[in-house]
Image (tube, rainbow, N blue to C red; front, side, top):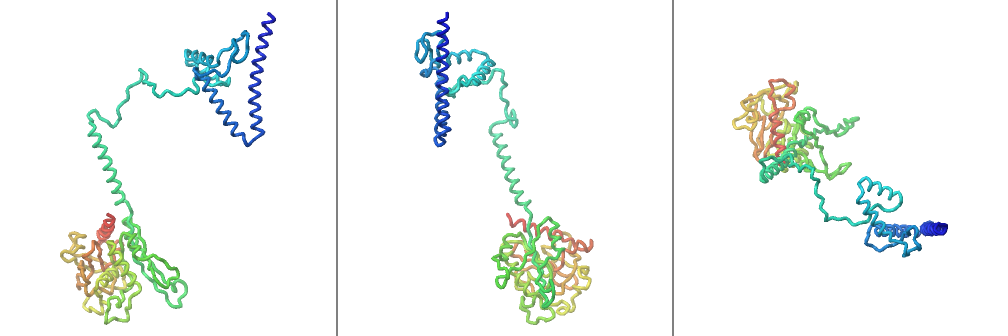
Length: 436
């Protein structure tokens, strides 16, 4: 009895010493890694690879045994001894028993194995991609998509898809065309400096009259004043040209202001009292031609109407009261409150904008007027009293129109004045069509 007890104690001591030896090897490896940082990463990766290989050996029952476990009471202890059995066999038997156990027991066994430091059952085994996993018998069959109907055929579904995509494309195209805000350029009025004057009176100013900007903006349009550009003598040289504005803007509005210089239309009998603004003439003529060449619409107001006529070779009355003594008054100290009647000739484009109107009341703030009509220009409106030309159109372009009155002042002038909203809408419609 005492001998058996001694033998068992010896076996326990041997097992403990073997475990201690293994622990000693691990500790030696750890100390070697700690003492030699230059090889620490290599040893760590090697140790990790060895653990993975050992785990695969344990999980594979058919692999060769790597260690032995002594049976209690066996006469010999050690690897390959008569009382030892392979560790892999033990792992296989434990895996078989866990397969027969209920799921809860299997989970508990895996948890206890993880706490003990050994890999869980099946760890390292290759996955079986060929195994079929049918759905449970109690599972409901998959429902058809909600967009399918009982009477649908593949062709009807395909047709609905094509129709939906076509609608989406048309919607996007329409949004790009109609929802993009128009950008309208307005020519600048120029205030030339007074020699020796202090402050801004001694500077060149370029400005925009508020009413003309607000009239265009009333149709939800962006308005930009186009400044003059110079090629020489500028304090701040630039490569920007007027053609760049014509390229990026959708239309041009020539606003009123100073007289057109008689030099611009080569008048031989010019009066010195009305020299006009030659600088602004050259700037606006270049601007006008750039927009026409770009296919963009142009609307001229008062001076702008006269400039369109001069641009195509026409001439002006430098002063109506002097050149046409029989004409009625076209300007007074009442400014935009002064008004008279106009008449639309047969076939006039302006008459089509105002259906049912042969005559209308407009304001009159000009002392110059069109004398000789330019080439390729049609007369669109005349003064009902004296026949002075009040509206023109260039027939070789989609929309190049000039009116002698100021439509931007009509809203505040009273209900008897012509509502010029159709004129503005036609101009903006032509600007939008240039994008197509």
